[in-house]
Length: 319
Image 1: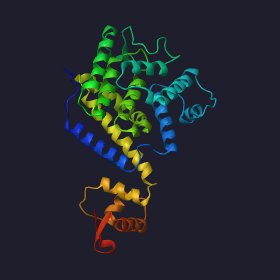
Image 2: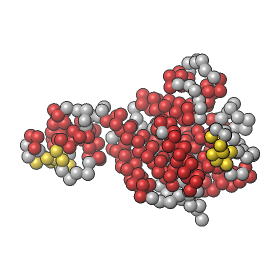
Image 3: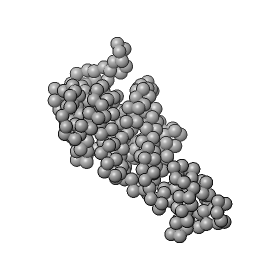
């Protein structure tokens, strides 16, 4: 029997549908593998954001310099954290998201030179403090391997959507706290790897940046799930972050669409049975009325659209 980790809620259902729709837009607008420069920028944002959450002091410019194999001045530990993270993110496709052995291998790379036993589960008890207050007492060390085994079994056997599974794993791993250090960055790394099984775009999506920008809410969602004994609130939070991150990627690229890509994007976005030029401009706020008119005329000429009426009163229907 698969352990129950969360309660299904209308918010989870609705956010899952919205994320699914955005993934459809990604596929229809050729963003599964974003342009090279964007992939590089987002990878750097991902690494800098994930480490900054854990207290790393290096700036985006400094992380970029390390990424380019340039020397920088900074704390040796922070520099090593970035170098290790670059190595493990560059090897993402080599890891099996359903393999506990692969998971430990990733931790070994990520925490090499930073902890005494990288790639090994903890053997002592650990508590998480906020100031002098105990925020979370992790399960006993003797039960870590069993709990992680159950979690990987859930990944392999559950019929939950891949996106929900990734959120469950992220939270439950944080709750178990299987390592003495590196748990937060491993949770975010492994969620990315799991999301990549849903769509390749997640390899280059800076989800960690959204978490960093909403760090207080991130910890609130973790604490609320701890209190409830289920990760429902955390799933709701992370689905919201995934939605924002996907929307940001689409918005960044929308301005560089060709006319046909704009038409295809609009088709995927609209629920209207028929629409006007004004409706089209509501989606593409940065293009001129003349450009919108040319787009719609081309759509008609290509057979994508059927026009009813003339000029600004014209209405369009996708064929």
